[in-house]
Length: 280
Image 1: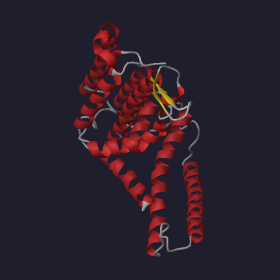
Image 2: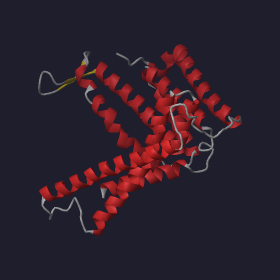
Image 3: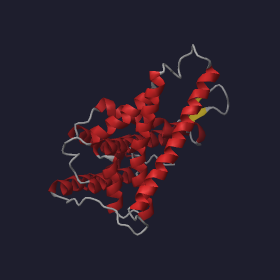
């Protein structure tokens, strides 16, 4: 059930990324640079007003891209534990004025730690939302090509290109193995079957995936070698033109960043808690 859902999610995400909308039709490099600008500005800002405004802007972008808010934030929630686990400890480990004392002397929450936690969570939310929007509006191959056009090292670009292509081959192989298991009425989550035997069968499946991956790698290598591929071979990428809509999109983001910076510099005192520096 879990691997079947994972297969469907990979395929549905690629389908969603290939839709037609104002944001989907933007040039890949522009979308990538825009997301990087938002993430970098958010990470280096210590005022809460910045991630709040940028998150609102990303919600507008999500609306223009005709993405489902429910599905998008499901993906954000799936990614949230990776950074949220570290953030959860921040209120308890930083010195400051104690605002809550637990039953133990070492268990307390400080104002500094709580402020830092709020800022980190806001940053994380903006970054994850930006990444979800990029992955939902740009097919994986387009993202790879955008990195290559922006000057990614040649070897790294080649590894990333092959990895993206192998991902879908891996999904297809996983689907075939899953169908074979289902056709034999095998369910790894069936409690009526011996746990040891289930683990053993799943281990066989994982070993089969490794063997199939190795075999597929050898086949692809021989195919590349037969076509005289070498380190000096040029990688093809489709030529795209940056048009008026791309310049407007970037100009809006840069304008928001400049306005936020001016707001923080000259009017932070009028923003109350939102304009206070929350860094350590």
